[in-house]
Length: 301
Image (cartoon, rainbow, N blue to C red; front, side, top):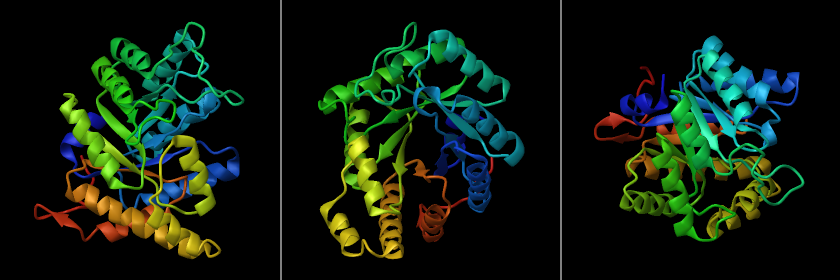
């Protein structure tokens, strides 16, 4: 089923992001994680696409298996990096043949060893071009990425919003945001987009903090910021991994509560192929209600 249809039927819609493991042991652990997360059936799950298409075959195989064998709606990430138009067409054809209905269209990060993005020969230079190609040649539901704090390569936030508007105008059905730790960035982001006439669903992306050093690396790469009070609390217990995780879970839970109560259509969890933190957040959310409805309705459609 297309995610655009799911979002009309399920509110709030919870979803999980995974990445293709490097080895057989990682595959076993991934499917254990998915099995554990099925306790809180997601509206959909997504699978990332390695730099330069390095996990192309794994991504196609995994989204197909997750849908066919586990019964969860899946979405494949697809990037422009290192692919010609014909190669993109081939990937999309393979996904279609596996019964996948949803694609997250991304420009992608520069290949390893480069700091700048170079348009592939006979390929696409912007995500909006990829979106338009998919819309004109296939029937996928298309998601795109949004950046509440601005894209790390685009210091002009207004220009970054214009780039996102072009992706929606090219045919995107919904937006999934980059991770953030201060909800004010999300609400301001949504207000600005609505003011520009963008009315597609905007799903906030949340990553429960599991490691201080790890999240510092992630935020440096993606340009997100961590509130000073949160950093202070994490640094005060940085030698106690369990205490760090508990602070991260508590903060993510508070974020999700406020996001949902103020109208977010769902939450997209960046799981890092782990289940414990996401399940903990969902467990805390199960008693949250709004408009006389539980925040965790049955995810059936």
